Image (cartoon, rainbow, N blue to C red; front, side):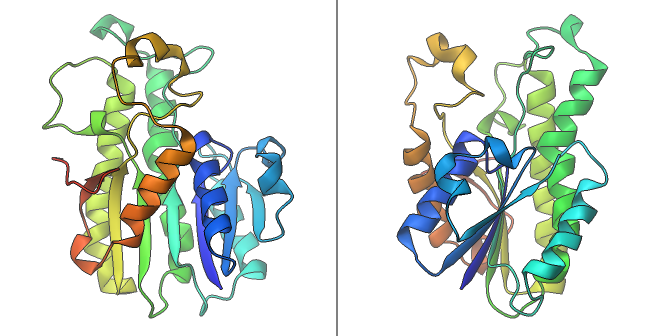
Length: 247
């Protein structure tokens, strides 16, 4: 049985990834993490091969609670085949992407870093005992092209860009440490492409000129990249079509 942990499973991309994994392989089991399992898609909540656990990226106690729950769900020797971090925060009721320096808000910055970056690092820490088995495993952070420092030619979106850049740095750091402790492994950042979701909905007019994917299309694209990962890809920043992006 393949064991996949997906953080942010109630979101558009996380939910589509879970559904696609379960559809294509009867030997896959998903452990889905989200703030409120009741908000996960009905199809996931009713599938016997998925276990939904409450998890809040902004809670420092959440990773420990997940590790404790996994002790009764998953044998450490069996381990996790893939960990996909699909949680993300761009906007909210009191939070919107900044257009200029005067828009910077400390609470918005802190929330963006907690959800987009810190949550990934702390969950990886909590999942470490299940990554030490001898089979090849994948640690994947769903990042964003706007988190590329090299590619930034427009500015703005301070909290989101900065937190995704921090997520990318976490991936690079982990790609150095984890192979020493959990080999064989590939730890990568993945840009999912522009996807129809609650995250992108407020920008629908400006997205009209872009190639926008449905969540199902995005999931198919990302899983194709994941399926092709090998140890040589460890530490890379990849786009949804498999091309390598600049950090």
